[in-house]
Length: 195
Image (cartoon, rainbow, N blue to C red; front, side, top):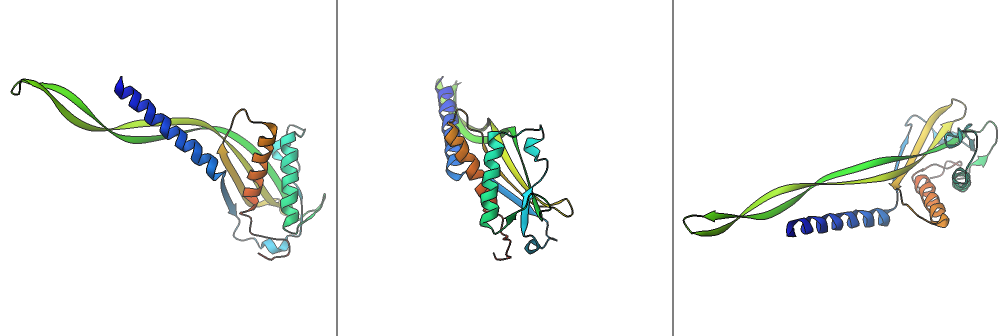
């Protein structure tokens, strides 16, 4: 019984530590770019048609907020919006997947055995690794920049974070804003070619 309580306390400590570290660091951002592309050639931008998140034929409050955030980020980098014939086309989509982490925790315990020579019980220590697992849902937002003339993706960025449940609408919007700004913080190019 005491061993079970120690295991549960250790599991809770690990889970809380993982949750706090995820909150403190924000989304995990990854980017990739086509190394053969000269990004200084791009001056205008527009939205790819149809946007992957709106392939069902309608928009949502989430896709509209992402569009607003993308517009701010692109304009802050000197790109001009063009509804038709833009140099760069922005596409985005979101995905939620179940994730599992598995790790080992070193443990030690004592086993009591009867020793006939000593005519008493003797404690024998032993060591083992206990396997722990944690399952959560991870949300990922991906933004792709596509060369409008060649219809070829030239840059992509994604932001991933554990999905938080039961949040207020303002918190959800702040999370979307943080994801888009985190992605574009790793986009090093500007329309004027300046870093």
